[in-house]
Amino acid sequence: MPDWLKAIPGGAALAVSFFTRLPVPLPPLGARSLSSAFWAAPIAGWAVGLIGAAAFWLAHLSHLSAGIAAALALAATMVATGCLHEDGLSDTADGFGGGRDRARKLEIMRDSRIGSYGAAALALSILLRWNALAELATPLAVLAAMIAAHGASRAMLPLFMYALRPARTEGLSAGAGSIEELPALIAVLLGALSLAALGPHGALAAAGVLLVAFLAFGWLCLRQISGQTGDTVGAMQQISEIAVLVAATVFLS
Image (cartoon, rainbow, N blue to C red; front, side):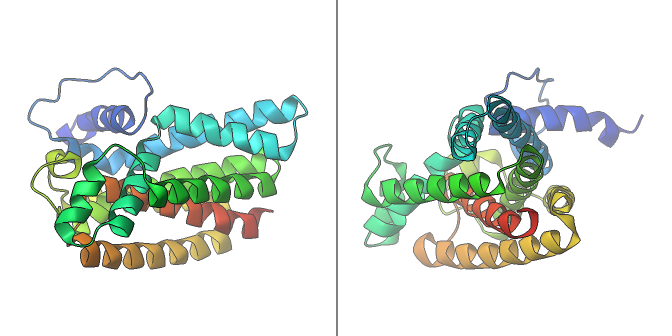
């Protein structure tokens, strides 16, 4: 068996372990860096999406309203990830909104306390995602949207880290190691596969929205802190997840 084929299960397990709280057995890392497993970020997204869809389905079977089912589905995904990306979004909003210069913005983003900008961004993210899931209403539509949104949004992360250099020499993003072209490309292909759940027109529309979000947020990060950090990577995931879920309401409702 080729070495690259042998490395697939280990890379997928490492990505799921990093991006979620799910207990998965990890093979020895050896000489591999965390960044080498980022190609499998969409696989971790599929796992999270399935958990959220299962929560919605169980709530639906219990004859709960679509709004309550959507809230429980969203809560399940946040528990599954330990709010990893929500934390990044709130820290990014606090830093970009509250800092006067690059150094101060990065300092604020290190602070674990949440400020007004972070709280507002987090509330808006939860509200938009909840409303999209509630509007989809049926378990099958929610499953398709969850797979598309969670898979494609995590496909953006290695691409984002490949395109933008780290804004600081230490921290989660810098410590993960540099992202090479091949892992980023594989992640994008898996993300495109995720979008297929929305159908051909929905996939094309969501891909277009993701491209705009990627370029706009990348430009903002360069302007604000001259690069990316682990927090901005998390914010990129949240923005992308929202974009795909909103697109899903148009094509799956």
